[in-house]
Length: 331
Ligand code: ADE
Ligand code: ZN
Image 1 (spheres, rainbow, N blue to C red):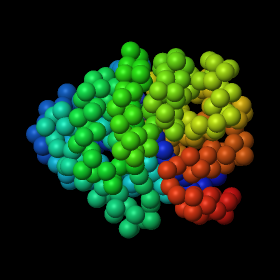
Image 2: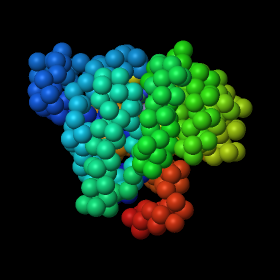
Image 3: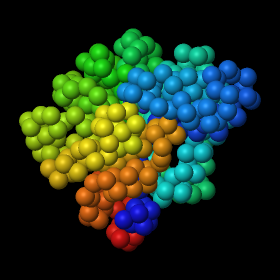
Image 4: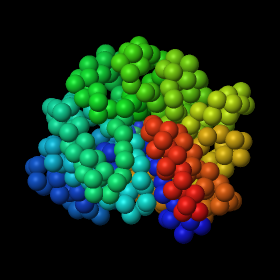
């Protein structure tokens, strides 16, 4: 199974670029930029990654992002992730970034996006890896703040394919962002949102019905509603599931408790992704391997999961066909 996982070309649809900041780079950038971080060494950083829920992770994740200052820092961050894609045979990736995490600290939108974009351009040139950028609004901030961010993003519209919604889910339902998502849609952005990671199915219904999203990020709580499960199956709405993340953030107690096999067997359009791999002990292949070691996933299941990602990606139909043919060839 591990061999199959490694050999298959893959797409990743749920990856926060700030969540790919490895402790080594965090330490290097903190020194270079003279930023205080509450860790003496790299081991100290890794020891701090002991989460009890989403919020306990987010507190540490936002503190880590403070070391990112210059365009080159964002380039290096993205390039390191690209090297992991090469290692894991990821040939297409759709990357989230959180502009407000940086603009709030006085780093310009342009600095962030140009650093990321230049690395992605080089990834295409050097390795043939294709990519898209998705801008997420932080849901713990106001809709007004999201509107400001949307305004700022318009100068870089050609570089951003979609708008998403992340950060502290509980208490910040999709309905809080209905107007700004409506405006983003009018501007031509595709739409996704984190929903049903920790919060109940009402958040998933709101994301679908009020925000009109095309993919649900996480969505593992769907299983609690038969009616929602049926709808997700009938409409084949993609779920970008992140197994390591769910375990590290205690959404499920362990991998054996994870519901991905049930979602898949029911006929949902499920994909596997790494979310914040530097914080959650592994990149995409490790997510697949952990699942296979703990759940009765068949080879066909792995192939379905991998194909679902290409089918659910934002690439054009022609490239989708080309990538799906590459998967078949590898099989
Ligand atoms: N930001 C980064 N990772 C996240 C996650 N798993 N859920 C919500 N917001 C996030
Ligand atoms: Zn996420």
